[in-house]
Length: 302
Image (tube, rainbow, N blue to C red; front, top):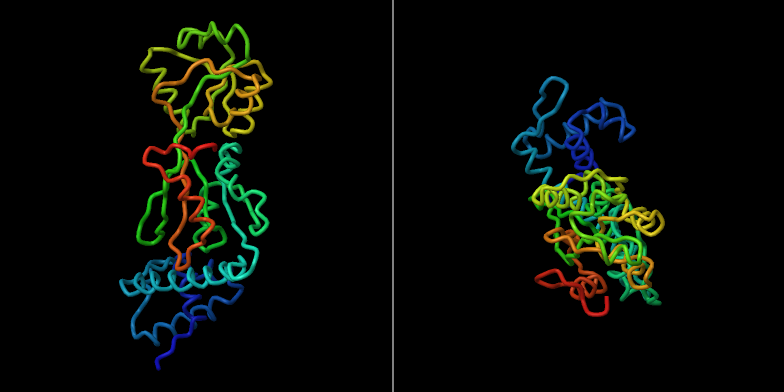
């Protein structure tokens, strides 16, 4: 039976990712000469060159690209094995590890996870970070799912599974009272302290486009990336906020805030991002099935 030294394969993968022998050696805490020797042994075992030297950089050969694809599959599968065992899937208590984009509405996260919150047999772990950081963790099976308001593209190297699970109206909300009933959109936008999402937000782009179509120029009082902070400012500043309705659902319900207008054509989409696994997580499948809707509507009572 032919064998393969996976230690050599791991070293090759690190060099291929870095594209530089020196940087890879530093990450692996080995000498450059020792690393180079390991790569040569793998090339000898395969009978093919894996790299082409391009100055100080290393470029993969055609065989190198093929071997890297297999190496990614092998080591990602190893990560999945560890994650599956460590998650307690075979034990009484299961861990469900959710990554949430840091700027995502906390209310939406709670609504999504409500069916499993408080379940004795489920240990819930929630980690917030940028989408890029979360995808790196999902790739090596340190997360089971990412909640995001940005879709992610799928390719042959990173086979993400991206499912839109909800779509929410974006509204103008402000202090409750007669001023809300008298607010005229868009005429009164220039008369209020306007709170808007930051320039990188898809909601902001849609709102700016709507204002342009209506021929309205606005000067924001504050630009806020974080939805939790936008919610607090909407509640406490006396300003009028451009915000998804779900973000301020509690304040609208208890009368702290009032909906002044629904912004036509301005929506926030919510996505569940997973990756290909050899073993499904039953509780995760149940959650996603509850939110599966062709128009992104939330399930009843959520």
